[in-house]
Image 1 (cartoon, rainbow, N blue to C red):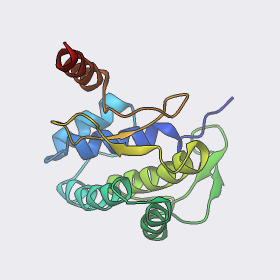
Image 2: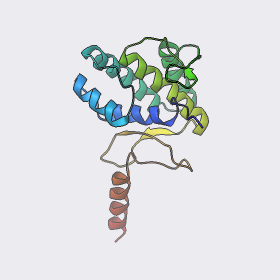
Image 3: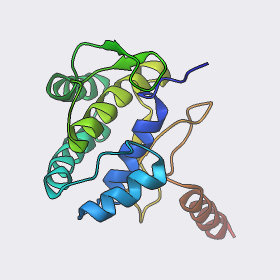
Length: 170
């Protein structure tokens, strides 16, 4: 079974990029390599700037006050970065692209992130993006938990908060 490349992975990548903003092409390349995405497109300084703009807009989706606002904000990003889907087999297997054939790294990531976020929210629930519930953390997260109860960006923040609550009761 081929997994949709626009699903959970791009939305987790978006959260990581938003939280660990790459400031140089080398930093962006390191994250892309670590996440095993978009090989063969070396980042340029313009890609870093364009990605930063996208991530600012993506965080407005994360921070939306309700489902309708979240949908409006994401629809604006989809209108800007996604196109009608089309079939392609450039990797040897048929799959969908939501972008033109040849694009730079920033546009490729923008399409992956916006379409991936839309699929994530429609398949898992409109409330499955958020900010870490730890009082000293503002990192974004994409809730990919089975039951939709993720409230922390990482296990470390969840554990620290549990210890804090335990000590407050003692």
